[in-house]
Length: 196
Image (cartoon, rainbow, N blue to C red; front, side):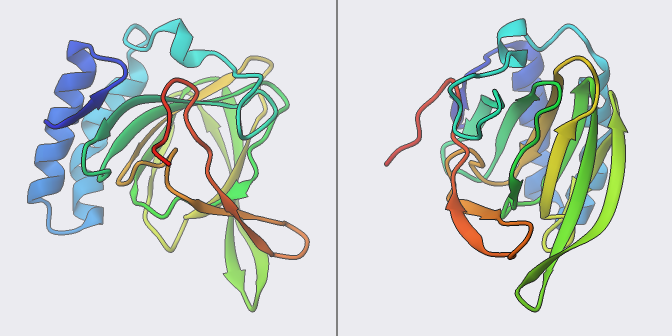
């Protein structure tokens, strides 16, 4: 298990170890996600493993609106990351992609998610879904890769992301909802720096 544990606890180490074994032996991203689902559901249902500091908004974050992305683990080869995304009440992320596959689930609060596709240089909204604590989904590009989330609960929402890149440090894309134009986007982490 070579990597950086920003939250170094038995729960996180055991989960990451199981995930890495599953990913290494799975025949496809879909197969890996299906195999990880039961453990991911347990993680979302356990209110005790994620300290309050990893559920806190970040007023000076790169995404604005107090949105904070807190690294929990990242592999040395940048092939896996686990992080919490904190979105204060009434805030929303930019429309963005991930360039990775994995699982995303809601740990606390409520969110609305909008899923987009690019068609003929424009963005098209193809699905909306409401998420409550415990809900989660597989993210398999190109389907589901472009989205925006907004917190709809009165309390801050916290989601847990398990993705197959170093998501906070990878240069991705933000999308203008009107023009469909893309701009380079790197969300960063609140608690660790990205290599330049």
